Length: 213
Image (cartoon, rainbow, N blue to C red; front, side, top):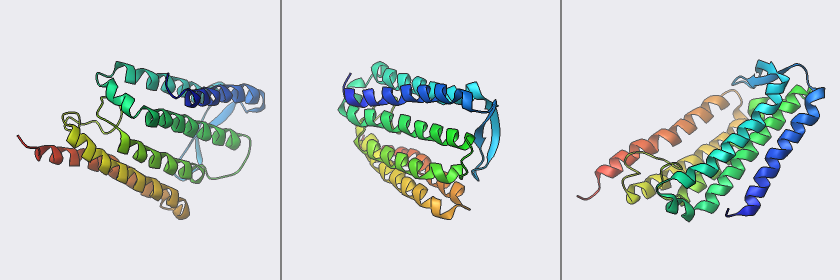
């Protein structure tokens, strides 16, 4: 396994989340807040066993999935070319989930704060990192902006991912700034992310049509 220190850090975060769940189990109410609306207010509950252990379990599943996918990719040699960025992506994702988990525990322990506003800065950083990873990614079947047109051409893949990189970084910056405009934060973030996701797909089609025959 390459980049062992990154994977050790990921495993540490996952084990820590399970340890925290076990420690706080006796201290939590039988029904814990498990969901918040766009305004950052609680609107969903679940039993404390599920609420405490669900996120750590999701982290385990996602980590194992991201370890598996490059191994079964027909273009896995290309994945190895940006493997360090991919491993850092896994780390940032697991850290992001851990951060959300800590916020949920804090809310259930009685700390008063707006969940949406607390999540947005880290979400913005996560989107910026995705943008940086896209810039370095190479053609593969599981990671990146995978359309029939990017998967059919290295040139289309590279141009689409350079564009996607810029759009995700812009979306990340807007997400961080959305904290200042809490009334419209949800829509700013949703529109920015949708634009970053959808426009490169459309762009890849038209870029593919330009290819020389």
